[in-house]
Length: 127
Image 1: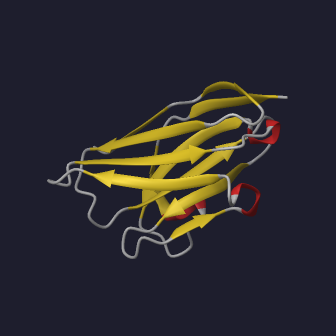
Image 2: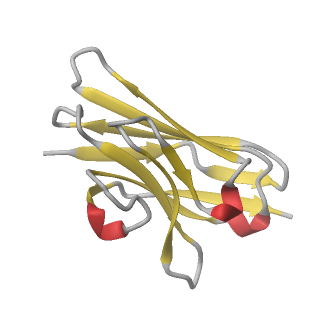
Image 3: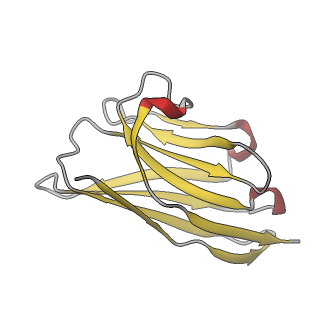
């Protein structure tokens, strides 16, 4: 059973930084791509960032490029996989519930290419 648990959300002011953490466990992760999505109040869930395991390439939605950075760490036995989303220069429009997801993607922005999802962590940015 794969588990994804997000943490690190909170209430911050515009311009502040947060680092979200997604801890994944329950299977080996040698071929797992990781992504971050978010759902703002009254809106559809949208892609934020992703990291390809096979080539280390990162992907970002335009609104967060230059402000957010996705990275990962895998334990030596592949039993635990942690993905981070460093969010700098936060804006009120970044307010949302942030979800991490795991899968094997060809199109990292597409939700259905991810097999596993966390429960989400709330990020609120005040102006």
